[in-house]
Image 1 (spheres, rainbow, N blue to C red):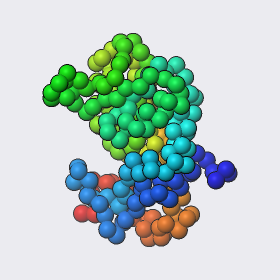
Image 2 (cartoon, rainbow, N blue to C red):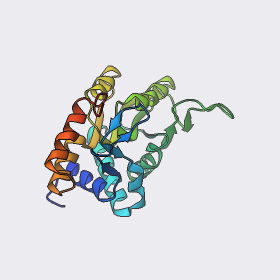
Image 3 (cartoon, rainbow, N blue to C red):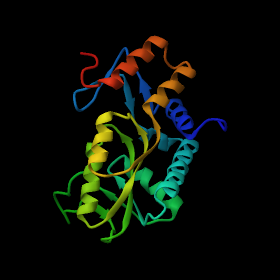
Image 4 (spheres, one colour):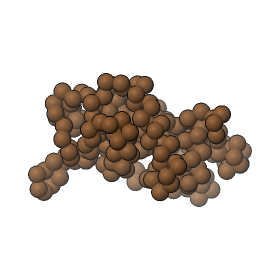
Length: 212
């Protein structure tokens, strides 16, 4: 894979370990109610040391390039927690993680770990769809006085709505791979047919109405 880009290599890894499943003829149903020909669970990558190591190093490299002044790495609960720990370890930086909402018991914390006001934070997420839940974490960190430099994720569906949401919050987003690269690699590896590719591309353009 040495001749492949990081985007292509990550896409191939996700397909190889079945972290990504493509089923245009038997679609999944998301919690939002959308019908989807793709399901992505990047937690699967944690079970494969070679893949896990490639991803953590690739994320660390992007953070060094894009956010060199980072003081703290913050993971998004729950899937971003282990990825964030791995990246923080590579970068030798402090780590915390952030829940979608404050706990309803105990100390009532939303941010777990230690974070000082004024620290510069990079948020780690495993997957970006619309960005809504991920950006709640940004709000929590900013509410605690942190400076959020940006977010890094393994994979994005690259929806226009996500781009709008991140722009509206002024949060730079870097992702190791995306939907278009994944489809190209899936086709080159004969994971999908030309007909399936058309259906998958159509979903990307209008996911709310696809399959209805």
